[in-house]
Image (cartoon, rainbow, N blue to C red):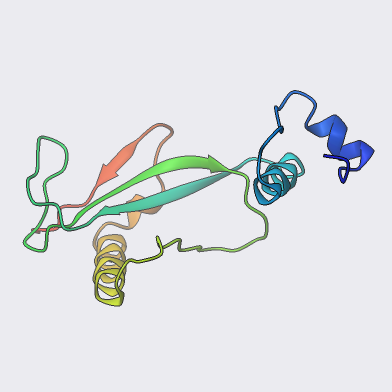
Length: 124
């Protein structure tokens, strides 16, 4: 890790970096410089075949949740969408529309209390 600056070596002294890919080390160093920020996270389980007491999918097999999270992201971006590579365009658009509909129907989902978890009623 000879490519690390003295400041970076100090920031990472309690992290075992041996054998870690350089991209991961750089990401950790980047996080060391950021302040934690609170976000409201929306998650979609898609193509769920069988639900349970918590995950109750709609006719498309989708189930939506939201929760508070603390992240180390930069910028004053009001909305950020993260999509797992390989997710189809169809699924992405379907779920984004459902999230938008949920927020329109229940605007309070943007004001979650600490440690609260929200679940969309997709059959409403």
